[in-house]
Image (tube, rainbow, N blue to C red; front, side, top):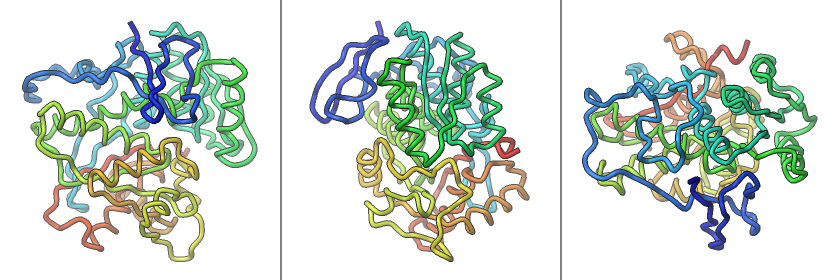
Length: 367
C-alpha cells in the first residue's frame, strides 16, 4: 500500500493515489507520512549485497522498487589535489545524480497507477525522468528551457519523451509545466517538489557512510540549485543518526551560482565573483526560487553549514583542473570543488578536515 502524504507546515494529510496533489493547499511541499529506518547494526560494506544499487537501502525507503537499472553505489575515490574524496555521481545511467531520484519517483508513479508523468528541468532531471519513464513504459512530457543543451534535449527525445521547449527564464519553464499539471495533463514527477525524488537522493548519504565503514566525514560540499542532493544528503545523514548507525552529522556546505543565489542572500553568505556578473556556465544550478528554500536554510543551520555564491571564473578554472586530473564532468559539477577551495582559504574547512564532494554530472552532457 503506497504511503500517504502530509504537510509539515499545516498538518493536512492526503491519500496516496494518481490524483494526489503535487503540493499542499497551503502552498508548501508535502512529505511522506511514513519515515522508515531499520533496527540494529548495519553490515560492513564487505558483507553488504550491493547488487541492487541504491535499493540496497530499501528499509529506509517509503517506496517499493518497481523501476530500476540497479543504479547507485557510485565510486568514492581519493582526490589528493583537493585533500578530499570525490563521489563520482556522474557515472549513473543517464550521467547525473538525478537518477537517484528518478528511480524512486518512477517507482512511486508505478505504485500509484500513474499513466503519464510531467517534469520541468534544465536538462539532467528531465533526461533522468524521461529515461526511467521509458523503463516503466509510461508517457512523459519534459518542459525545458528553449536554449537547453542539445545533448540533454536528445537524451529526452531518444527516450521517447516529448520535450516542451519554453522561452524565458527557468522559472517560466516551471510555470508552464505547473499549468499543464493543473490542467490534468499528467502526474507531476517534479525533482523539486515530489517527496519521492528526495527519498532517492538521500541514498547518497547512506552510500557515503557505508563506503566509509559507517562513519561520516567532517564536511560534505554540494551544489545548490533546487537543492535536491543537498536536502537528500541532510535527510539521509539525519536518518542514520536517528537510527543510531552514526554518531554525528557532517557539516553541509553549499555552492550556488552568482545571479542565482537566493539561499546565499537569505543566509548572509559570501559571494565570490571577480566582475559581479551572473554565473553563465553552471546551468544546472541557475535557480532563483528553489521549491524548498526554507528547508535548505534549516539544513544549513542544523549542521552548522554555510553557503557561497561563485562566479563563472572560479568554476571554469576548477572545471579545467578537474578535466586535467581525469574527472570528465560538466561545468555545474565543478561548482562544489570550487567552493571547497574557498572554504579552505577562509578557514571554514580546516586542512585536517575529512571532506566528501559529489561530482554531479558527466562532461558528455556538454557535447
